[in-house]
Image 1 (tube, rainbow, N blue to C red):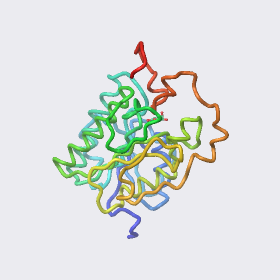
Image 2: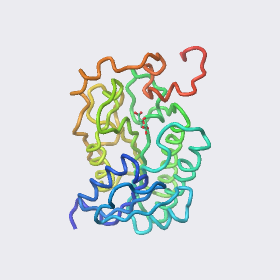
Image 3: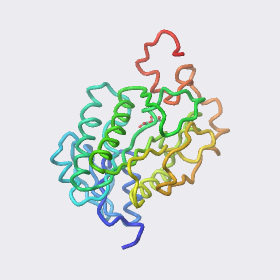
Length: 271
Ligand code: 15L
């Protein structure tokens, strides 16, 4: 077996979402054996070497069964944008616990698709390292901070390795001026998932999920330890994105952008 193909199958949750579909396609094309799952049907033909099982992250028994024999869980499932607390609670908190219990039982590693919204209330002018304070900008970002902490718990208590990727803006194209700092190309995401899976060891670590953007908000992380270097960049889109900003000073002040102003009721600007 090639050294670029994991010895055991990989469980990919959130497989029917945009990032999941792209990963399923790329990893299957690289010859990986994948177990795909999502609460929504898989909208594409299931790639060769893969099987798809529709499942709810709230259903712990099914998650345990899906992970059987897997050496890696790429966890992209759950709510992926801001929602009321009750909507986030099941998939992102209870569901994540099911993922970690499955990883613990299988001795599998987890890649957790965290988000920049776990730190969204840091100012854009501050360059952050991976050990910065969590400053979630909503219930979604809060669930991502909780998820990273769950990873830390399972590493120290059970030795479950986990790579927490604080994804910036992972889209096919750069769409606004903020993304000149936060954009992550699909290809860089695929390479990151490959390295997180194939690296000899990871422990518990955090990686900023952004391409090689010179306007980045983010600094030190564990990329070198797993051998990932982003190859794409938002820089060539800079001229096109000029003026693509909002007219909201709060949104423009903070890294989390539009999420920071959803249900924002503060009367005076934070110091
Ligand atoms: C995220 O975490 C979301 O999943 C995605 O839809 C974008 O909103 C992204 O953050 C972003 O901040 O651009």
